[in-house]
Image (cartoon, rainbow, N blue to C red; front, side, top):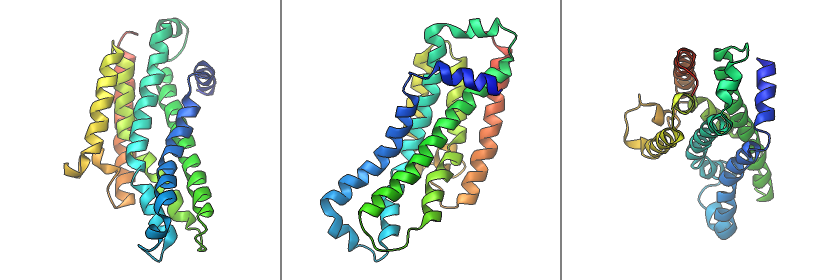
Length: 231
C-alpha cells in the first residue's frame, strides 16, 4: 500500500493538489480578513468573547469549503487516470485493484488532512494578528477544523466512487455539482441525510455518522471497482 501511495503522489505531483489544499484553507480565513478588515470595531462589539465570535465567523465557511475541496480532489484524481489512460496500464501489472482504489481514497483524504492542518495554523495566525488579548481556544480551533473532515467522508467516498467507475468525467462533475448544491441547501433536509451531517451541532454524533457511513460507501465503491473493467 505504501508503494502505491508513493507512486500516486509522484503521479499527481504537478497537478496542483497541494495548492488546492492551501487555497481551501486560506480562502476560509481570507473571508474573515475581509470581514474584520472593514468592520473590526463593530464585530468586536458583538461579543466580549472575541476569539469565540471570530471562530463562529470562520466556522460558517468551513462546511462548504471542505465539501467543495473533497469533490474537486476526487474528480481530479480520477481524471488523472483518464487523461493518461493509466488504468489499463496499471491493471496489466500484478497489482491489487482493491489496493489501487484504496490508494485513491487515502490520497484524497491526506490532502484534506493537510487542508485541515493549514486551516488550524491560518485561523490562529490571523486571530493573533487581530490582537484580541485573550487566551487562544486551541481545542475549539482544532475541533472546528478537523471534525468537519470526518463528517464529510460519506460525500467524499461517494464522489470518488462515481468518479472512478464512471466512463465519462462529465458524469462525475455533474454528481459533484449536485452534491455541492445539496450541501448548500442541507438545512432544509432531514438530519439523516449525509449532506447535513457536516452542520449538525453534536460533534460526536456527526463524526460517528460520517466515519461509519463513509467506511461503508468506501467499501461499496472498492467492490464495484474491483468487479468492473477499467475504463
